[in-house]
Length: 409
Image 1 (cartoon, rainbow, N blue to C red):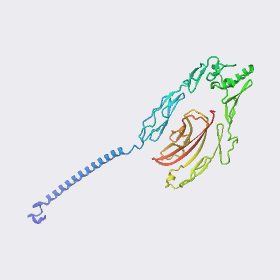
Image 2: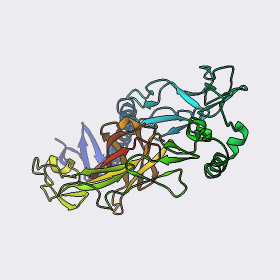
Image 3: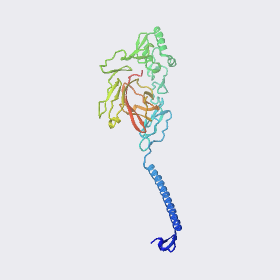
């Protein structure tokens, strides 16, 4: 056994058939403890290095597997003699293209950023419009191309917008007619007509847009003429243009009780904004004639979390063939508690004619992107969603109905 009894001298210990002093035993124990501590430190350092290498490897694998949290498409160029609507290049966003007056778009009017981070459609360009390509001037007239129009320079003996009418009676040179305003022309024609046999001023001037004496229709009178406005308009004091009649203010409408009268160009419309019917523990109450608010509902319900907080109704009158792009409507919030707002078109009849863009951090704009010939009614539903760290806090629905007149005034 390992005990001092096997050694001949006191203060000694027997180890493996040898005798060691207590000092030697303590020294040996200390050396063994130091050796174990060194091995333990080396092992811990090795484990730390291994853990660090595993973390680096894990991050590298994650970058290869996980998608970019904000995937986007390459930048799209603005076509020469045109413009681009939409600044976002994230997946799912749309960009719209328009051409300046006198040019038409060749290529894709709308392009969408796809999941594979490429744009749909083809890059468009703006091509100059040659209005004289169809040879519109008859009887040897010379066509002069302009912006969105053409002018026929007629030879002697012919007149009309396309040189289609032989000259009879009074004919004022085109240069003089272009320089005369409608009011001056009215006074001039009346003075001349009083001295000459009756001249049909309507036939002479109304057929060409450069010399039109009435914005709508013209009636010839002995020695004079009179401008006529369509139903829903009154002749202005200049005796040439037409003013819209506000049937709603003047109580000239036939809207029934419960309906609201909306004045439009050349008439009126009767509307009845209604809140959505209750569905999945979600219901709405009218807080004004044109707005509905959601009633309190269980927040643990998915239907409640995704339902709109408010729904508002908007009715816009618009003349036919208005120039574009044109801002029709703005939406914003005064109580902004999240970190981002998103604006989108979610549906509606004729929504492809519109686009949405952001004018500042809290405001979105509805843009008319294409001219529309009336009469027509276009509907679009807009959504403004508020997020905090990509979590939906609430959303608001704007239902916009645009009434487009038959006329351009």
